[in-house]
Image (tube, rainbow, N blue to C red; front, top):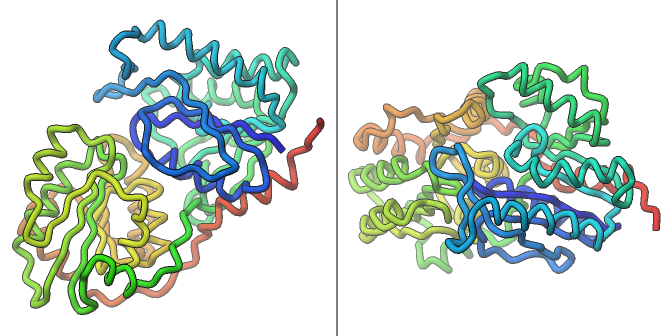
Length: 387
Protein backbone atom coordinates (compact mmCIF):
# COMPACT_ATOMS: atom_id res chain seq x y z
CA UNK A 1 0.00 0.00 0.00
CA UNK A 2 1.23 3.50 -0.78
CA UNK A 3 0.37 6.16 1.79
CA UNK A 4 0.80 9.91 1.67
CA UNK A 5 0.97 11.43 5.16
CA UNK A 6 0.56 15.21 5.39
CA UNK A 7 1.99 16.74 8.57
CA UNK A 8 2.89 20.40 9.02
CA UNK A 9 4.74 21.39 12.23
CA UNK A 10 4.72 25.18 12.27
CA UNK A 11 4.61 25.86 16.02
CA UNK A 12 5.78 22.81 17.98
CA UNK A 13 7.08 19.35 17.15
CA UNK A 14 4.53 17.16 18.93
CA UNK A 15 2.50 16.56 15.77
CA UNK A 16 5.61 15.48 13.91
CA UNK A 17 6.77 12.99 16.54
CA UNK A 18 3.29 11.50 16.97
CA UNK A 19 3.02 11.11 13.20
CA UNK A 20 6.42 9.41 13.03
CA UNK A 21 5.40 6.85 15.66
CA UNK A 22 2.35 5.97 13.56
CA UNK A 23 4.43 5.73 10.39
CA UNK A 24 6.93 3.43 12.11
CA UNK A 25 4.06 1.06 12.87
CA UNK A 26 3.07 1.09 9.17
CA UNK A 27 6.41 -0.52 8.31
CA UNK A 28 5.02 -2.88 5.66
CA UNK A 29 3.95 -0.02 3.43
CA UNK A 30 5.50 2.64 1.21
CA UNK A 31 5.05 6.05 2.80
CA UNK A 32 5.57 9.55 1.49
CA UNK A 33 5.59 12.06 4.34
CA UNK A 34 4.82 15.61 3.20
CA UNK A 35 6.19 18.26 5.56
CA UNK A 36 6.87 21.96 5.26
CA UNK A 37 7.79 23.45 8.63
CA UNK A 38 11.26 24.20 9.93
CA UNK A 39 13.41 21.09 9.59
CA UNK A 40 14.01 18.97 12.67
CA UNK A 41 17.06 16.71 12.59
CA UNK A 42 15.52 13.30 13.29
CA UNK A 43 16.10 10.01 11.49
CA UNK A 44 13.32 8.59 9.33
CA UNK A 45 12.46 4.88 9.02
CA UNK A 46 13.70 3.25 5.80
CA UNK A 47 10.15 2.85 4.43
CA UNK A 48 9.39 6.59 4.83
CA UNK A 49 10.39 9.08 2.15
CA UNK A 50 10.05 12.76 3.01
CA UNK A 51 9.03 15.46 0.55
CA UNK A 52 9.59 18.87 2.08
CA UNK A 53 7.46 21.71 0.73
CA UNK A 54 8.91 25.25 0.71
CA UNK A 55 9.14 26.11 4.40
CA UNK A 56 6.73 28.30 6.34
CA UNK A 57 6.23 28.85 10.05
CA UNK A 58 3.82 30.64 12.35
CA UNK A 59 4.79 34.00 13.79
CA UNK A 60 5.14 34.33 17.56
CA UNK A 61 1.60 35.70 17.89
CA UNK A 62 0.21 32.70 16.02
CA UNK A 63 -1.62 35.05 13.67
CA UNK A 64 0.11 34.53 10.35
CA UNK A 65 2.78 32.78 8.34
CA UNK A 66 6.42 33.65 7.91
CA UNK A 67 8.75 32.21 5.30
CA UNK A 68 12.19 30.88 6.19
CA UNK A 69 13.59 31.98 2.82
CA UNK A 70 14.35 35.68 2.88
CA UNK A 71 14.35 35.81 -0.93
CA UNK A 72 10.76 34.61 -1.29
CA UNK A 73 7.56 36.37 -0.23
CA UNK A 74 4.75 34.38 1.34
CA UNK A 75 2.55 34.62 -1.81
CA UNK A 76 5.45 33.15 -3.82
CA UNK A 77 5.95 30.32 -1.33
CA UNK A 78 2.20 29.71 -1.22
CA UNK A 79 2.01 29.33 -5.01
CA UNK A 80 4.97 26.93 -5.01
CA UNK A 81 3.41 24.80 -2.27
CA UNK A 82 0.01 24.56 -4.01
CA UNK A 83 1.63 23.42 -7.22
CA UNK A 84 4.03 20.98 -5.58
CA UNK A 85 1.45 19.30 -3.35
CA UNK A 86 -0.90 18.71 -6.29
CA UNK A 87 1.95 17.29 -8.36
CA UNK A 88 2.88 14.93 -5.54
CA UNK A 89 -0.52 13.29 -5.83
CA UNK A 90 -0.32 13.15 -9.60
CA UNK A 91 3.04 11.42 -9.43
CA UNK A 92 2.61 9.16 -6.38
CA UNK A 93 -1.03 7.97 -6.89
CA UNK A 94 -1.53 6.85 -3.27
CA UNK A 95 -4.01 4.32 -1.89
CA UNK A 96 -4.44 6.32 1.30
CA UNK A 97 -4.10 10.00 2.21
CA UNK A 98 -3.68 10.69 5.95
CA UNK A 99 -4.14 14.34 6.90
CA UNK A 100 -2.89 15.31 10.33
CA UNK A 101 -5.45 17.52 12.18
CA UNK A 102 -7.20 19.19 9.22
CA UNK A 103 -10.07 20.18 9.12
CA UNK A 104 -10.20 20.32 12.96
CA UNK A 105 -7.09 22.50 12.81
CA UNK A 106 -4.52 23.77 10.31
CA UNK A 107 -7.23 25.89 8.67
CA UNK A 108 -4.52 28.24 7.41
CA UNK A 109 -3.35 25.39 5.14
CA UNK A 110 -6.67 25.11 3.31
CA UNK A 111 -5.11 26.99 0.37
CA UNK A 112 -3.13 23.86 -0.55
CA UNK A 113 -5.24 21.06 0.96
CA UNK A 114 -8.67 21.91 -0.41
CA UNK A 115 -7.66 21.68 -4.11
CA UNK A 116 -6.22 18.19 -3.52
CA UNK A 117 -9.17 16.98 -1.46
CA UNK A 118 -11.66 18.28 -4.04
CA UNK A 119 -9.72 16.67 -6.89
CA UNK A 120 -9.69 13.29 -5.13
CA UNK A 121 -13.45 13.38 -4.64
CA UNK A 122 -14.08 14.58 -8.20
CA UNK A 123 -11.76 11.89 -9.65
CA UNK A 124 -9.47 14.54 -11.11
CA UNK A 125 -6.80 12.82 -9.05
CA UNK A 126 -6.64 9.05 -8.53
CA UNK A 127 -9.29 8.04 -6.00
CA UNK A 128 -7.95 7.04 -2.58
CA UNK A 129 -9.21 6.76 0.96
CA UNK A 130 -8.86 9.99 2.96
CA UNK A 131 -8.40 9.91 6.74
CA UNK A 132 -8.16 12.70 9.30
CA UNK A 133 -5.68 11.89 12.09
CA UNK A 134 -6.19 13.95 15.26
CA UNK A 135 -5.02 14.07 18.85
CA UNK A 136 -7.24 13.86 21.92
CA UNK A 137 -8.18 17.51 22.55
CA UNK A 138 -9.02 20.42 20.26
CA UNK A 139 -8.16 24.01 21.10
CA UNK A 140 -11.04 26.41 21.61
CA UNK A 141 -12.17 28.83 18.88
CA UNK A 142 -13.51 32.37 19.13
CA UNK A 143 -16.61 31.39 17.16
CA UNK A 144 -17.05 27.74 18.06
CA UNK A 145 -20.35 27.35 16.18
CA UNK A 146 -18.91 28.64 12.90
CA UNK A 147 -15.80 26.50 13.40
CA UNK A 148 -17.82 23.32 13.94
CA UNK A 149 -20.04 24.04 10.93
CA UNK A 150 -16.97 24.46 8.73
CA UNK A 151 -15.41 21.25 10.05
CA UNK A 152 -18.60 19.23 9.52
CA UNK A 153 -18.94 20.47 5.94
CA UNK A 154 -15.38 19.54 4.99
CA UNK A 155 -15.41 16.20 6.78
CA UNK A 156 -18.63 15.10 5.14
CA UNK A 157 -17.54 16.25 1.68
CA UNK A 158 -14.01 14.90 1.53
CA UNK A 159 -13.14 12.42 4.31
CA UNK A 160 -13.82 8.73 4.81
CA UNK A 161 -12.71 8.28 8.42
CA UNK A 162 -11.40 10.04 11.52
CA UNK A 163 -8.79 8.34 13.68
CA UNK A 164 -8.70 9.89 17.16
CA UNK A 165 -5.46 9.16 18.99
CA UNK A 166 -6.92 8.98 22.47
CA UNK A 167 -8.22 6.48 24.99
CA UNK A 168 -11.94 7.25 25.26
CA UNK A 169 -11.82 6.28 28.93
CA UNK A 170 -9.77 9.44 29.51
CA UNK A 171 -10.70 11.92 26.75
CA UNK A 172 -13.33 11.79 24.00
CA UNK A 173 -13.74 14.14 21.06
CA UNK A 174 -17.13 15.19 22.42
CA UNK A 175 -15.30 17.02 25.23
CA UNK A 176 -14.14 19.71 22.82
CA UNK A 177 -16.41 19.25 19.78
CA UNK A 178 -20.18 19.27 20.23
CA UNK A 179 -21.46 18.05 16.85
CA UNK A 180 -20.24 14.46 16.81
CA UNK A 181 -23.65 13.19 15.71
CA UNK A 182 -23.40 15.25 12.49
CA UNK A 183 -20.16 13.59 11.37
CA UNK A 184 -20.70 11.08 8.55
CA UNK A 185 -17.19 9.56 8.21
CA UNK A 186 -16.22 6.61 10.41
CA UNK A 187 -14.95 7.61 13.86
CA UNK A 188 -12.41 5.31 15.50
CA UNK A 189 -10.42 5.69 18.73
CA UNK A 190 -6.94 4.22 18.44
CA UNK A 191 -5.63 4.78 21.95
CA UNK A 192 -2.91 7.32 22.68
CA UNK A 193 0.21 7.28 20.52
CA UNK A 194 3.41 6.87 22.50
CA UNK A 195 6.97 6.03 21.61
CA UNK A 196 7.99 2.65 22.98
CA UNK A 197 10.47 2.95 25.87
CA UNK A 198 13.93 1.66 24.89
CA UNK A 199 15.01 -1.71 26.16
CA UNK A 200 18.18 -0.38 27.79
CA UNK A 201 17.83 -0.20 31.55
CA UNK A 202 18.07 2.70 33.96
CA UNK A 203 21.44 1.42 35.14
CA UNK A 204 22.94 1.20 31.65
CA UNK A 205 21.94 4.72 30.66
CA UNK A 206 23.16 6.17 33.94
CA UNK A 207 26.47 4.48 33.34
CA UNK A 208 26.59 6.10 29.89
CA UNK A 209 26.01 9.49 31.55
CA UNK A 210 28.56 8.67 34.28
CA UNK A 211 25.91 9.13 36.98
CA UNK A 212 25.83 6.71 39.91
CA UNK A 213 22.69 4.85 40.93
CA UNK A 214 22.43 6.67 44.26
CA UNK A 215 22.55 10.13 42.61
CA UNK A 216 19.42 12.14 41.84
CA UNK A 217 18.78 12.74 38.15
CA UNK A 218 16.12 15.21 36.96
CA UNK A 219 14.96 16.11 33.46
CA UNK A 220 13.31 19.41 32.50
CA UNK A 221 11.79 19.87 29.06
CA UNK A 222 9.62 22.28 27.10
CA UNK A 223 8.36 20.37 24.06
CA UNK A 224 8.99 22.41 20.93
CA UNK A 225 10.25 25.22 23.13
CA UNK A 226 8.41 28.32 21.94
CA UNK A 227 6.65 28.89 25.27
CA UNK A 228 8.79 26.98 27.76
CA UNK A 229 11.54 29.44 28.78
CA UNK A 230 9.89 30.70 32.02
CA UNK A 231 9.40 27.14 33.27
CA UNK A 232 12.96 26.07 32.50
CA UNK A 233 14.49 29.15 34.12
CA UNK A 234 12.44 28.46 37.26
CA UNK A 235 13.45 24.80 37.33
CA UNK A 236 17.13 25.70 37.10
CA UNK A 237 16.79 28.24 39.94
CA UNK A 238 14.88 25.71 42.05
CA UNK A 239 17.42 22.99 41.37
CA UNK A 240 20.23 25.18 42.72
CA UNK A 241 18.50 25.54 46.08
CA UNK A 242 17.16 22.01 46.41
CA UNK A 243 18.06 20.27 49.66
CA UNK A 244 18.94 16.66 48.91
CA UNK A 245 21.85 14.93 50.59
CA UNK A 246 22.98 13.22 47.40
CA UNK A 247 24.79 14.20 44.20
CA UNK A 248 22.15 15.77 41.91
CA UNK A 249 22.06 16.38 38.18
CA UNK A 250 19.63 18.28 35.94
CA UNK A 251 19.36 17.77 32.18
CA UNK A 252 17.44 20.56 30.44
CA UNK A 253 16.02 20.22 26.93
CA UNK A 254 14.73 23.54 25.63
CA UNK A 255 13.16 22.29 22.38
CA UNK A 256 14.34 23.08 18.85
CA UNK A 257 12.06 26.09 18.39
CA UNK A 258 13.00 28.10 21.47
CA UNK A 259 14.21 31.55 20.41
CA UNK A 260 17.96 31.97 20.19
CA UNK A 261 17.87 34.69 22.85
CA UNK A 262 16.00 32.50 25.36
CA UNK A 263 18.16 29.48 24.59
CA UNK A 264 21.40 31.40 25.04
CA UNK A 265 20.20 32.83 28.34
CA UNK A 266 19.27 29.39 29.65
CA UNK A 267 22.49 27.91 28.29
CA UNK A 268 24.43 30.46 30.37
CA UNK A 269 22.82 28.96 33.48
CA UNK A 270 24.39 25.53 32.90
CA UNK A 271 27.20 24.11 35.00
CA UNK A 272 27.42 22.65 38.51
CA UNK A 273 25.39 19.59 37.60
CA UNK A 274 23.15 21.38 35.07
CA UNK A 275 23.35 20.44 31.38
CA UNK A 276 21.41 22.39 28.73
CA UNK A 277 20.67 21.14 25.20
CA UNK A 278 18.12 22.02 22.58
CA UNK A 279 17.09 18.48 21.73
CA UNK A 280 17.86 14.79 22.13
CA UNK A 281 16.61 11.88 20.03
CA UNK A 282 17.01 9.66 23.12
CA UNK A 283 14.59 11.50 25.41
CA UNK A 284 12.85 8.36 26.67
CA UNK A 285 16.16 6.93 27.90
CA UNK A 286 16.68 10.06 29.99
CA UNK A 287 13.21 9.64 31.50
CA UNK A 288 13.78 5.97 32.30
CA UNK A 289 17.06 6.85 34.02
CA UNK A 290 15.67 9.88 35.88
CA UNK A 291 14.00 10.34 39.26
CA UNK A 292 11.84 13.30 38.23
CA UNK A 293 10.54 15.02 35.11
CA UNK A 294 9.43 18.67 35.09
CA UNK A 295 7.84 19.73 31.82
CA UNK A 296 5.13 21.39 29.81
CA UNK A 297 1.96 19.38 29.20
CA UNK A 298 2.02 18.55 25.50
CA UNK A 299 0.53 15.32 24.18
CA UNK A 300 3.84 13.55 23.53
CA UNK A 301 5.42 14.51 26.85
CA UNK A 302 2.40 13.29 28.79
CA UNK A 303 2.47 9.99 26.89
CA UNK A 304 6.20 9.66 27.62
CA UNK A 305 5.45 10.11 31.32
CA UNK A 306 2.81 7.38 31.20
CA UNK A 307 5.06 5.03 29.23
CA UNK A 308 8.08 5.41 31.52
CA UNK A 309 6.13 5.77 34.80
CA UNK A 310 8.48 8.53 35.95
CA UNK A 311 7.41 10.87 38.78
CA UNK A 312 6.42 14.05 36.98
CA UNK A 313 5.43 17.66 37.53
CA UNK A 314 3.72 19.32 34.60
CA UNK A 315 2.85 22.93 33.79
CA UNK A 316 0.14 23.18 31.12
CA UNK A 317 0.48 25.89 28.47
CA UNK A 318 -1.94 28.68 29.41
CA UNK A 319 -2.55 29.94 25.87
CA UNK A 320 -5.39 27.50 25.21
CA UNK A 321 -7.34 24.73 26.95
CA UNK A 322 -5.67 21.69 25.38
CA UNK A 323 -2.83 21.02 27.82
CA UNK A 324 -4.90 22.09 30.81
CA UNK A 325 -7.60 19.50 30.18
CA UNK A 326 -5.10 16.68 29.60
CA UNK A 327 -2.87 17.51 32.56
CA UNK A 328 -5.80 18.00 34.93
CA UNK A 329 -7.24 14.58 34.14
CA UNK A 330 -3.88 12.85 34.50
CA UNK A 331 -3.34 14.70 37.78
CA UNK A 332 -6.66 13.40 39.12
CA UNK A 333 -5.55 9.87 38.27
CA UNK A 334 -2.31 10.38 40.20
CA UNK A 335 -0.12 9.94 37.11
CA UNK A 336 1.51 13.37 37.49
CA UNK A 337 1.31 16.55 39.55
CA UNK A 338 -0.12 19.62 37.87
CA UNK A 339 1.75 22.88 38.38
CA UNK A 340 0.38 26.40 38.12
CA UNK A 341 2.08 29.75 37.57
CA UNK A 342 2.42 30.37 41.34
CA UNK A 343 4.44 27.17 41.64
CA UNK A 344 7.20 28.64 39.46
CA UNK A 345 8.49 30.75 42.35
CA UNK A 346 11.90 29.07 42.81
CA UNK A 347 11.69 28.37 46.56
CA UNK A 348 8.22 26.93 46.23
CA UNK A 349 9.18 24.90 43.17
CA UNK A 350 12.29 23.60 44.92
CA UNK A 351 10.18 22.23 47.77
CA UNK A 352 7.70 20.66 45.35
CA UNK A 353 10.54 18.99 43.46
CA UNK A 354 11.97 17.56 46.69
CA UNK A 355 8.57 16.16 47.64
CA UNK A 356 7.96 14.68 44.18
CA UNK A 357 11.29 12.83 44.07
CA UNK A 358 10.58 10.93 47.26
CA UNK A 359 6.81 10.54 46.90
CA UNK A 360 5.64 6.94 46.89
CA UNK A 361 4.39 5.83 43.46
CA UNK A 362 0.63 5.79 42.97
CA UNK A 363 -1.29 2.68 42.03
CA UNK A 364 -0.96 1.75 38.34
CA UNK A 365 -3.62 3.17 36.03
CA UNK A 366 -4.56 1.46 32.78
CA UNK A 367 -4.44 3.87 29.83
CA UNK A 368 -4.17 2.59 26.26
CA UNK A 369 -0.95 3.98 24.74
CA UNK A 370 -0.81 1.49 21.84
CA UNK A 371 -2.23 4.03 19.40
CA UNK A 372 0.47 3.66 16.75
CA UNK A 373 0.06 -0.12 16.48
CA UNK A 374 -3.73 0.13 16.66
CA UNK A 375 -3.71 2.73 13.87
CA UNK A 376 -1.64 0.47 11.64
CA UNK A 377 -3.95 -2.48 12.29
CA UNK A 378 -7.04 -0.39 11.51
CA UNK A 379 -5.52 0.92 8.28
CA UNK A 380 -4.57 -2.57 7.12
CA UNK A 381 -8.05 -3.90 7.86
CA UNK A 382 -10.04 -1.03 6.36
CA UNK A 383 -8.15 0.46 3.41
CA UNK A 384 -8.68 -1.24 0.06
CA UNK A 385 -5.81 -1.25 -2.41
CA UNK A 386 -6.63 -1.05 -6.11
CA UNK A 387 -3.63 -1.19 -8.44
